[in-house]
Amino acid sequence: MKRVRPARLGDVTLLQELEVASFSEGFRAPDNFFKSVINDQSDAILLVAEIDNRVCGYVMAMLQDGSSDHIDLHASERSVWQIVSVAVHPERRGEGLAASLLEEAILRAGKQGGCARIIAEAHVNNVASIALLTASGFQPIKRLSRYYGNADGIRYDRPLFGNTRPKHPAPRLT
Ligand SMILES: CC(C)(COP(=O)(O)OP(=O)(O)OC[C@H]1O[C@@H](n2cnc3c(N)ncnc32)[C@H](O)[C@@H]1OP(=O)(O)O)[C@@H](O)C(=O)NCCC(=O)NCCS
Image (tube, rainbow, N blue to C red; front, side):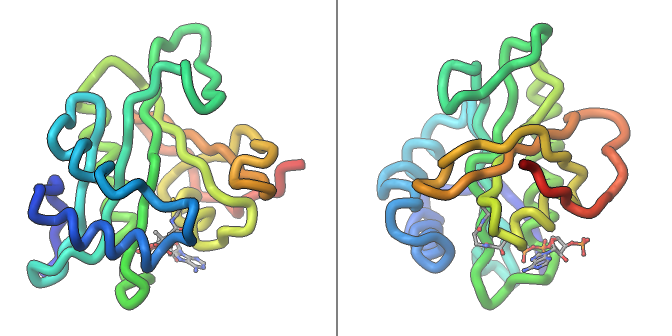
């Protein structure tokens, strides 16, 4: 059975294993990061996806006030939610887990109130991440030069409420 739930301290070891399986060195969350987010989730959402009680994926979102990461807020905004990371165990990819995680994170971010938009970034060559964001109603808004070391990123956004934008093929930003 598949379910999405908030992460608990008991999940930290599996979350760290997921990082190793999903991201190359230098792009992984530091060891104590998951623990500190689970202990203080006031401005963060950390959800795991389980299949038959086994953690197979996670999503982390954080409330950003625009002071970090070159995040441009709209004139009417004081903050935006940001998908910081999403990962699914290699053996469980392609089963809709990441889409379910994003959907639940977006729902919870909307319920917390205070902002109306959520952003996310993808490596320009990360086909799976771009497909996931596009399928989840995100739209590309900005190319981020050298966002991942020497490689560029693409920033996406979508509203937290109301109709999501229609699905469309991921465009090329120059
Ligand atoms: C990106 C990632 C989280 C996707 O997880 P997933 O559970 O396999 O994704 P889903 O099964 O929910 O797929 C969601 C959508 O993306 C598409 N998609 C997923 N992987 C894809 C791939 N490799 N190529 C093309 N499309 C892909 C799916 O077809 C689906 O679209 P649809 O609804 O239009 O059919 C997973 O590949 C991963 O963990 N990658 C390593 C970590 C990473 O790069 N994270 C993203 C940056 S933080």
